[in-house]
Length: 253
Image 1 (cartoon, rainbow, N blue to C red):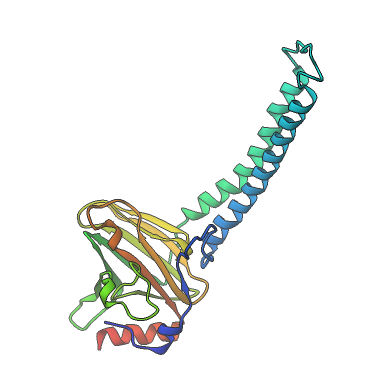
Image 2: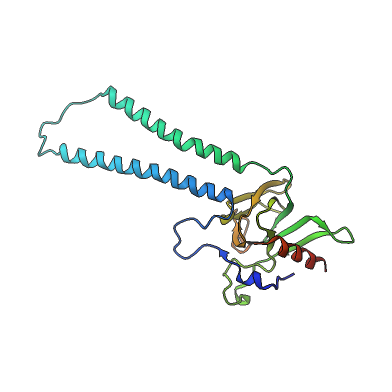
């Protein structure tokens, strides 16, 4: 079930880069919210860092033993104690409000998603089931996704991240991903989509995704699951609705 269309080979890829320090480009509102929250919190961190360093340098400069041979005996200050209690509380409120808003939005589940995909973790590969589509013999669209060995990689493909069968989804469409496991604990995680969902044997976890742009998004199992834990990548291919319909049709014919 390899994809042989030209648009799949030229689609932009979202994956980690060498020496990357920042986030991958956001492809969902959820990931964009995570990045925005990170930037907001980092702003407060810089302010606190500069203020603490200023206080430290000022204290070392003005209270050096050469300038103040006789130390001052200050053991209590009501005003400063009130200030350093109130101001951190205000800062925490500015951090907590958007943080909780994002946290609850990440837990929201779309009531009527357009497509439901079931991801089943195995040692050490993924199985995907498109339960919305059935063939003439009532079999749903199901396939396994294995990592491509390094010796079989083609030019431009990413080591330890490419798979033989990608998860193809339509862009700008509400999706529901149901995650579970057939053996041990796994975790279905794709950084650009802002999702990380544990795959637990005997339990169904679900997440909602709205991919805003076409492209190829790479992820990996993020729960240590055995010897080959590092060799079960995830590749999500977001395409146009027309191309997605053609892909589904080709899977049954």
